[in-house]
Image (cartoon, rainbow, N blue to C red):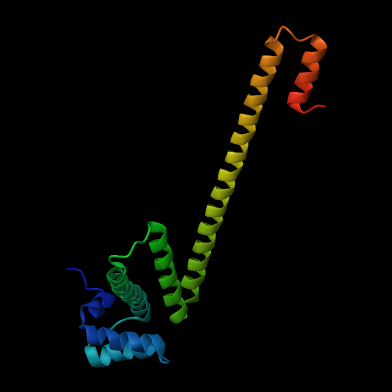
Length: 175
């Protein structure tokens, strides 16, 4: 029979016990103080590495719980509002950024800002490409108009070759 992992044993403790151990992990005593607390008060003998692994998972789990509660509240606040998906994305991003700043989580804050910058840059590039495409379409339309006008001049048999050349230069803007 396999031995139950120590970090799993901590995970099986009650919510209050897990909170107490997590407070010790994040406190001044650090992992050693939390290890001592787990052993003396809750009867769980755990190594520092197992405790560190549990604490990392616990922090992610806690953060996800807080963010889910925040998301649920935001959805309630937004019900009936006329938001576009982009508005909601921006609002969620702002909430997450504010939460990271409030918790002094610099890694998350920087990643969120980098994501925002990348999205803004992508939007700007897309808008620039749209403008370039519109300009190219206008140029094609002008060239097509000039081609039609030139064809009319070439097919006009009443004009002398010199008059045709002069009008074609005028159409093409070469005068």
